[in-house]
Length: 160
Image 1 (cartoon, helix red, strand yellow):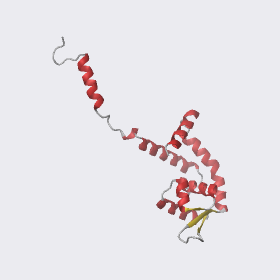
Image 2 (tube, rainbow, N blue to C red):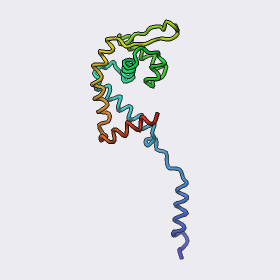
Image 3 (tube, rainbow, N blue to C red):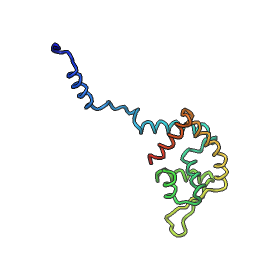
Image 4 (cartoon, rainbow, N blue to C red):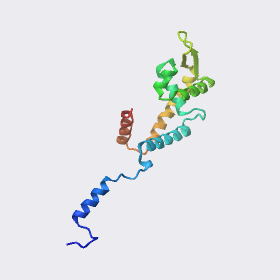
């Protein structure tokens, strides 16, 4: 027989059951949002270091790529294609327009709608940057083996 204060199998089982109902401590550094944000910030740092144009941001580059792929597009189309919010896309378009990379024209059927198109200068800049962008993707994923790289891309695509 066990003396008072000692444990035995029944006591251990009850104690383990009680511990199992307690919530795990919350560690923000193990949460998906935190990890995605860290990965994105790492990618942005690599992008800025290797893109070769200090004025070009990742979201500006994504916008030019969307315009190259889609042709002329509305702001709404660009928001859908790039996952950039309305407030941010306006500033991006203003900066790309000021650099001569895009044109901004009113839609002749709807004066409230602005149509955006890439210019020859924007295409030339994009052509120069695409090899660097491929290298940036490689550098971002460099810590992963080829199977992990494929899995990471697969999982991230599946999330949206």
